[in-house]
Image (cartoon, rainbow, N blue to C red):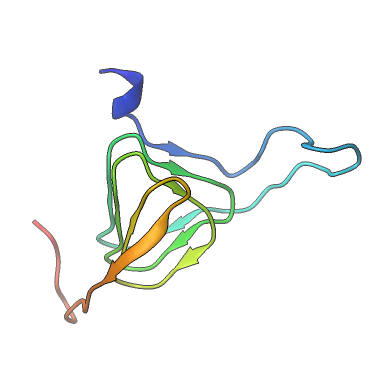
Amino acid sequence: MEMRDLVCIYDTNFHEVEPAGGVKRAAVKIGDDCWIGSGAVLLPGVHLGRGCVVGAGAVLTGTHEEGTVLVGNPARVVRRMEIPKGYRRR
């Protein structure tokens, strides 16, 4: 396994970015039936709704609604999908 194959999920930035800026800590929440591509990075405070798809290598911040497809660095929404009630990916 190479480093690029991993997904990184951070709930802290580990150190101050600027003097007296403090350390940011925020929970990361991943909804049911999400798919997260190889090499993606989820930063503190990310919330993914049910059925979100995160492209390989994407770098995420913020909250994303159910059925959102996100790609890029920084991640951007490229599509929204309707997720039928009870649907599960196989």
